[in-house]
Length: 376
Image (cartoon, rainbow, N blue to C red; front, side, top):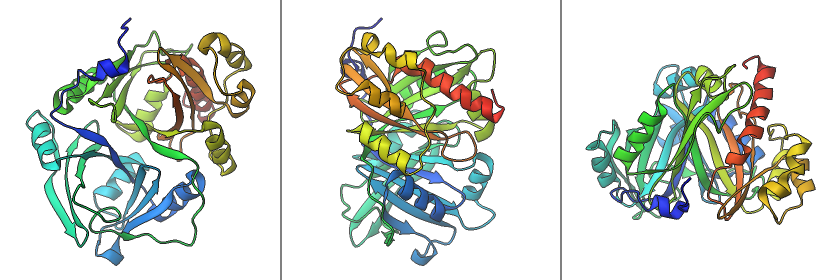
C-alpha cells in the first residue's frame, strides 16, 4: 500500500492545463423553471442569473443558481426538437456540462485537442458592458462535456447573455460551500480507458484505486479510480460495474440513464449535522441509515471524533478516516424519478480520501432501494 499523501500523489500531475476549480455544473432538464424552484427550496440555492426568450435566446431557458462557490445552471429546451430536448428524452434530467475555471480557455482547448480530445465548442469570446468571458469545450465520457471558462476580465453576474434572476421567493442557504468532487459512471471495461484519457488529455493523475474485492456486497460490486488535477481542485472518480450475483447500482444507472454520465455530485459543508438537519426538514430524502453495529464499531474503526455518535446515527451520517484525518458523508436518494443522479454531502476534517470504509454500508443501502424498485 502506498504511503504517499494525496498532496504527494497529485504533485505528479502535469501542468499544461491549470485549473482553478469548478466554474459551474449545467443540467439539461425537462422543466428548468420547476427544477430551479426545487433546488432553491430543497437545497437552499439562491437566484443568480437567467437567459431565455426575454434575453434574445430562442431555443432554451437557463436559470443560474448559486450557494457558496457552487453554481448550478438549469437548462431546458423550448421546442420538441433540438439537442437539449433530445438529451432529456434519452437520459432524463442529468448533468451535461462540468465547467472548469481556467486561466486561459483558448490554450486549454488547444492543449487538450492536440492530445486527442473531441471538440465540443471551439474557442469563443463573449462580451458585454462588464467585460469578456472566453470559453471552449471538449467531450469526456458519454455525452458529458468539460467546458473551459476564463473570466479574469469579467465583472458581471455570470456571463454575457444573462441578466439578473430576481425572485420574491428566496429560501435561506443550507451551508453548502463548494464542489468537492463529481463521480462518473462508465460502461463495462471502460474505466481504464477513461482514466487514460484523463491522464493523457487533461494531465490528471490517478490518486486512488478500488477494485471489486474492496467495493462489494453479497450481491454486487464495482471498480473505481479517482482522477485529480495538479492542485487537487478538480477531482473526478470514475466507476465501472463489476461482476456480481445481481445487478449493481452502476448497471442500474447505465440502464436508466441510457449511457455513461455523472452519477453524483459531492458538495462540501463545514457543519454536516446542521446542513443535513436543514435538508431533511426541507424534504430532501437520504439513503437509509446503516445498521446499529456500524455505529457501535465506529470508535474502534475511526478513533476519536468531535461529533456525538448518537447524532450521527440519528441522521444516518457515515464516517471514515485515513492517515490525514477523518471525513463525514451522507448520500441523497436520486433527485429525479429515474434512479440516476444523486448528491453527496461531505465534511472533511483532514481526510482527503473518499470514504472507502463506508462503501459496504453505502452499497447495502443502495441495494435496499434497488430492491424496492425491482432493479436488483
